[in-house]
Image 1 (tube, one colour):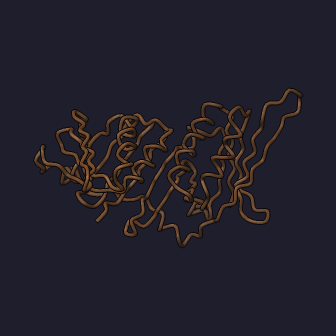
Image 2: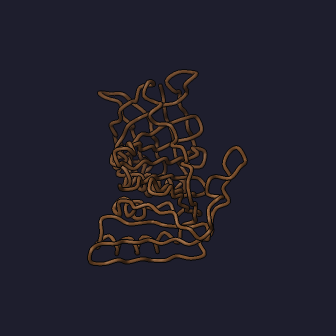
Length: 284
C-alpha cells in the first residue's frame, strides 16, 4: 500500500487548502478515500443517531502535479484512511507561499501522512517544513460503511439563494432558536422559519429556480407529481446548517437543496473541480 503526491502549482495548492479548511470546519474526524483518479472526504455519522453525513469528491488531476498510489490489492486499488482534517488544514497553512508540497503515506511508529512543505529561501538551499499527521488505516472489511450516500427520493429540489445571504439570515436566527424549518416548493420559493413561544420569524426567497432532475430510469422523481405551490418542509438543527454555511470556502458555482418532507435535507454544492454533499436529518 503506497501513496505519494505533489502539488507545485500555487493556485492548485490554495484551492486544495480551501477544500481541506471547509472539511475541517464540518468534521472533527473523517475518512479520506484515495483512488487512482479521485480523492474523497467522507463523514458517515449514522443519520439514525441524528448525525450529519458528508461526501466530498475531488478529481486529483485538477489539484496534483504528481499522484501515485497502490491500493490494498490489485482488484481493490483504493486506500481508506481515518484522519483529523484540522491537522491537515494546519499543515497546509504553512504552505501558502510554498514552492512545492509533497504528501506521502509513511509508517514510522504509526501510519502517518507526511506533508513536506518546500518554502522559498534566500540562499540556494531550500527550507523544508515537515508535518506528520497520524492516520488510521481502515481495513477492507469496513469499506462498505463508506459508500456514497444515496440521493433520497425528495419532495422538492431547489437552487439555494446566495450562500452569504443565507448565512447572515441563519446567524441572526440562531440566537433565537435551536432549530430552523426549511421549506420550499417547485415554484422557486423557499422560506427559512423559526418559531418559538416568544417569536416567529420567516425569511422568504423567490425566483430561485428548480433543477431539472430526472431519476435514472428516465421517469421523473416523485417531485414531478407535486402541486407547484405546495411546500415540502423539514425542521433541522440550526447549528448544523450554520456550520455548513460558515465553513464554505469553496465558493460553489451551483448550490442546491433537496428536501424529503420531515425526514432529511440534502445540500449539494458544486464547483468546477469539487462537489460537496451534506445531509442533515430532520428533528422529530
